[in-house]
Structure formats: structure tokens, C-alpha cells
Image (cartoon, rainbow, N blue to C red; front, side, top):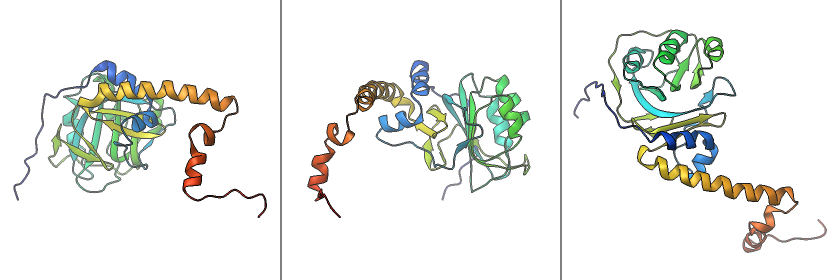
Length: 230
């Protein structure tokens, strides 16, 4: 088997900024539905504070567990609006990102962090309004000793992320949108919101989804019977 050499790719293609903005406004649940329920990260990826939201271009980082050297390397490549997406080569909950790295990231215009490991200094990150989605919160420190890669395809919390993909995060979790599909998914999501608004009005007026979704026919097809007594 060929050994993969640690690599830092300096230049990537980023998604259209209008599409990124629209996807962020739509939110995780709508985007996930708009792209046929794909791209959602594992539900253990939670925001460190409930109002956290982010939408931006992925800068991917592959690290050794307990070693955040490559996060430092990745910051040099970040542009305003980027989202750091960090994963480790095996499972880790160590606190690989804290307040000082957040200060550096904010100075580079980084919009937020998605990390399939742990973070620390959560009170400071929250006070900074620096949005983070992480597997764990841990004060366990890290070293800076082992090479990794930046801007290569990674698997983060069960989802494939390629550099330049769109990351959308909110209280519902994190969803990944492929860079090339961002515009189309933004359009589908916008159409879905318009459709849901009409549905919402019908529900407010007392109609039942059982009727206008056609679920009565489905129940009959499945052999469900209505009876007046037990």
C-alpha cells in the first residue's frame, strides 16, 4: 500500500458566495431535505452555544489525535468566510482548539469551526461569539509534533468533506453541500421554503396533513382500519 505523504494544498476553489449566503439563511434542516437527505454529520456534533450559526467554505484539516499542529498550518490558508473542518486519523476527544486559536482564526476572517474531536475554553469562545460544532468539550491539552494534511478530502463525523465544499451549521447540527452543487441546492431549498409557507398556512387554518398529504389513502393501503370501539 502506498503511503500517503502529509500535504498542504495552498489553493482551492471556493463555492459561490451568494449560494453560501442563501444556504446559511435556509439552515441545516432545510438544506438537508433539499439535497435528498444527504450530507448530514453525526448528531453528536453539537454547537457549543445554542445560537451558533455558520455558512462558509470548508478548509479541511487532518490531524493526529491529540496533536493540533496542522490547525496552526491551516490558518495561514484561510480567507474571510472559510470554515475550519478538522478531523483526526483515529477517534479523539482531546481539546484541540481553544481561545488562542480562535483569536488567530478570527483575525483571518474564519467564520467558524467544525471539529470531530474536542474543544476547550468554551466560555471564552462563547463570549467571542465564535461558532463551534464539536464532538466533545475537554480541557485535555495537545502537542504539536506530528504531520498531517490540509485541504485534502476528509471524513468528518461520518460525512465526506472536500476542500471548497459548503458547511452549514446551526442548532440542528452540521450539513455539507458539495461545492459544485451549492447553487442548485440553494435554489431547491428556496423553493422548499416557499412550499412550506403555503403548507403552514393550511395547517394554521385547521386542515390536517392527514388529508392534504394524502395519508388517508396510505393508511388504507397499509390495511389500517378505523373502528368506533376498542
